[in-house]
Amino acid sequence: MKRIILILTACLGLFSLAFAEDLRLDIMFSNDVHGGIDRAQATFMNPEFPPQLGGGGSAATLIKKVRSLKGPTRDSMLLDAGDFFQGRPVGTVTKGTAVIEYMNAIGYDAMTIGNHEFDILQRDLVETLKLAKFPILTCNVIDTKTNQIPFYAIPYIVVERMGVKIGILGFTTTDTEKMSFPDNVRDIKFLPEKPEVAKYVKILREQEKVDLVIVLGHAGLPYDVESTYLSRYDAQGNPRSAERYAVWGYDAQEIAREVEGIDLFIGGHMHRGIPQPWIDPVTQTMVIQGYAYGSNLGWLTLKIDPETKTISGYESPAVREGSMITLFEDEFIPDEELGSMIAEQVAIAEKGMDEIVGSAGVYLSRTNVDAQSLMGNTIVDAMRTEVGADFGFMNLGGVRSDIKSGPVTYRNVFDVMPFDNMVVSFKCNGEFLRKVIETRVEGGRHGMIVSGGKVIYSKKQKDFERVTSLEIAGEPWDPNRIYTVATTDFLMQGNAGLNILIQVPETDITYHQVNLRDAIVNYFKKNSPIRTKIDDRWKRDDNAKHTAEMLQ
Image (cartoon, rainbow, N blue to C red):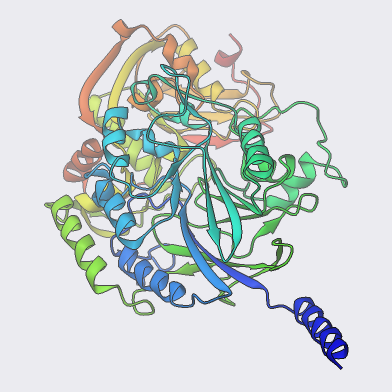
């Protein structure tokens, strides 16, 4: 009888193991918060009647709710994929300290470094990051003085949840070097993402013996995920080309496909959330990323087999939003303690920001029509007017918000231009100016926002002969005439692919000591109501022929 009981017990044990409940790991994450821990209006949903977002206070309410689900077979972690402070006043004015204090208070487990962390000098960034009570991760940022990862960061951490050993690895896009002021990345180099991630994934798997690997990467999926994948890889997942022609850093899709051993990639940088994870068909790596400015909190529940300690599936908490939970204030009542803490910081940072500086006669959208937008055109008009230049230009990615019709405050202008770019002008001949414009329509590039001219270009023409017609200051372009051109110090230092600008002699450059944000404010004060139009300043015409002067 005893033997029968033992056999029966063993069988029941095997039966229970075969049907053991999956473990559940709630992954909460943020990316590209850009200082958005304050309350804000969701103008991206309804410009005229925007719903109220609760910011960090509402996020805290949701985070605490998820953590309350903890039990023997359920646990959670909270992670951030970079660009945490630069963009909103409470982040920018405090150089990120207000955001770090919030992250400490709500209990983040780790954060990776984004490119906009380097919008401030290293000494200021270090003082901010030293406040963090959680690990700062990056495996590919190197201090050239020591040839090591800077002291304030580590490449990875290993944590345990429910008996599952998890490695969390961070990396920073190499685009940072192209997008930052040289002084801010002095003594810093950015190693290529793919080999560094592969190296540390191997360390985590073979030396640390982790069960799962999560990559926190400040890089995102391409906008058209499926078509981009098909253009890169064949049906077996092999690269269609032996060479990588992209000038930008590796994105999340490339890392997920080309680096084995990653279970979950949490990305950012693109400001485009995806409701359900994209899963690489070969490696089965899941990739997830959220929207920007603290408008949402990501929440993905991993199902983990308790025996194999591998991912068996995932769950999303919401039918409509999937893993991207919009932080509507009336749905997630802001946590009282954290909401009050954030409000105090906001009051200090935003003093005087509600002063009305002018008005907009039309809704100034940043949505591009080719390389024009009502908001972008307004900015470049303001910049050119401020310094009396013949021509002005800026990069497409420099416009960060819309301005709706009606009264305009300094806060509105700050939202449009949260970065401390300064207005500069330089003198050059027409031939050089044409080369600058050609640089921005070379290959797959989509142009620049311009003022004071009329540009027609054709993608059917070969590189550096694509501009078919050009007028500057109301007259036909003259290759020998000396023009005064306005732009930003950010571009003047060769960023956004404009390396050609570092060829301009210092003697031909004027630093006006005017913040671009202030130039915009001045423009509104002097010219309101602003009624900018989409006009003929920039036009793509693939059937256009070169004008006589362009053939000189």
